[in-house]
Image (cartoon, rainbow, N blue to C red; front, side, top):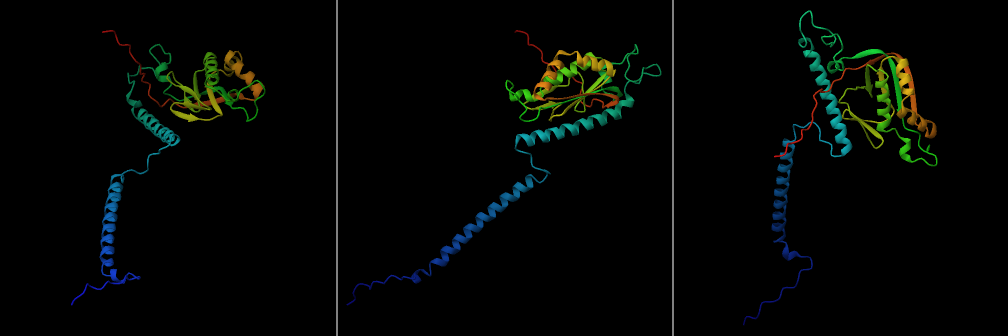
Length: 260
């Protein structure tokens, strides 16, 4: 008489599962291989999409600002080169046409004067921040740095003193030049600069120096020079050479919409 099948004792070494394990391992290996293949195809696709880019775009604000400044500098150089190429074909009015950007009355045309490099005597003014820890009682840390109004006071005094041309940090100053103070740095023509700030002006050195000395705004700055150690130097120059303006002269403005 046949009795119930004998119970099989558990195999502590798992030998009874030996037939099943190879199959499970094989299926897992195949699955991992498929995932790896798909990942490789995805990486390859991304690499092909961005293969044409020489460098990655910076993701931080400082890097973006530096990249834009370099792009602006490159575009300004290209613009200056193009202006030089077409200059021989502009203003050709015959033998009677005035030279050097002069108008019909012989006076220099302000709209074209800045497009030419200028050389002559003048003055150079430098401004820089006070040393760290120079503040005294009654002065704030903001009093230790050069501000936008300080540069504007110097520039306005030089114009009032008869400056024929001017540059700030090597940039030719025109009617559309913007000088903005942001924190302890200065933005000029789309670029960021740290002190010292250099202003050069071509004109009569004596007249320019006298105008600086009589300017109320410059006088206030010089008081802080004595009080907290802000930097200041003014030197006369026998010959300065200011570059031509290389940006656009096109003015952009907004119009007020009429009520409808």
